[in-house]
Image 1 (cartoon, one colour):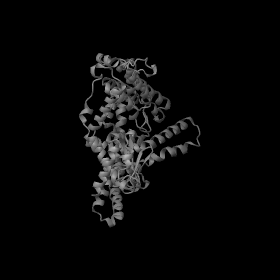
Image 2 (cartoon, one colour):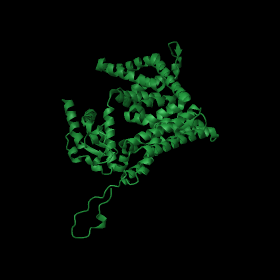
Image 3 (cartoon, helix red, strand yellow):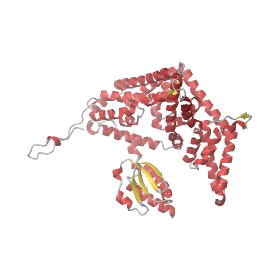
Length: 510
């Protein structure tokens, strides 16, 4: 009965905040349901306040609905379930269909229509991505994404420290910067364990406690399979596996341990069983897997760098579309743990360069479509900084062919960077997250900062140029140009009223 009441409360709230499609995030604190909204004008605030369980609302960065302690923890899961059900029930057919550029009757396509098509494609992709494997990858991403700000901050400091070391400047401050940059990375396994338990429904601190075993210096005294363990062996992969095991042990304990003994027995058994399995199995296996990942990445770029770069740079945008890029996050983090940087990210960043080049070509190829050109101008600055989604879903993907030519540009840039890796100029990013120009402060390599920056900049230039040329010459059919390269017609004039119309009230061109 209590569950029905909580679900009824959630069901009453959802339509009053704009429905499932208006929700961007859901969380709760001690007393408030906190939701992110796409459009706050859709909120029916007075009706919301009249819901019996709602004690009030608070406008902040998120929209906060006060439900009170206890109630909010029970209503939130029901609210999340209703949002998920509402999105899944949305008609997929309308989203999956890809409209041909050009409106009915051949009227010129506007940026708003392309954006609508892009949103439909994005929604269709989300529907197709709701497979168990992709949902698992999304959960893995949820573990690592919260760590990105610390990775970026520490990565930039590490780069600054390396620069000062190479130049011989400020020797007194270098050890301090080294400690600041390295502290987080030395304990990243703990944070991964904490987030893993949180994501998979366990007690976060128990996940962190089990993962902390991996980085404890005393594990050097433990012998597993006749081999001595090393602190940090297994890294983030070991931490992820250990914390996931801890979640299952904890859930088993919650099911079978009597409530009177739960507070004492469950944490003890969770840490003990998971810890022993971690020490005598998972650390060794994860260590071997981590070493294999690093060895394979080095071998791939050393022996076939140009081809590997071409494939990785060319396929990254489709990987993003399929949601499979999330599988690369633990690999990036493992490489950063091992060598201080991930050699894959600068190559994958070339996909964004191809996208930018393609968008610039669209801009110059369609001089009469002011609406679309305005969209491109507003989205390009973000594109140069590696945020490609506005250009992907607002321009290239709904147009079709320019998305393919953008991938060609990414492949060319990736081949350029991969070639220099093959020639022995290896470099990578000390953190994940940024791309495009924003990646410059995070670059590090074996051949000096000058060569590293020059090669990355050269890769971006190649991606821009090839993406532009491929799109300009091959990105449009004659029919597409006829439909797209036309200024929208003015709205029909207002009916005559017997007096001269006010020039300030004339219909404006879209």
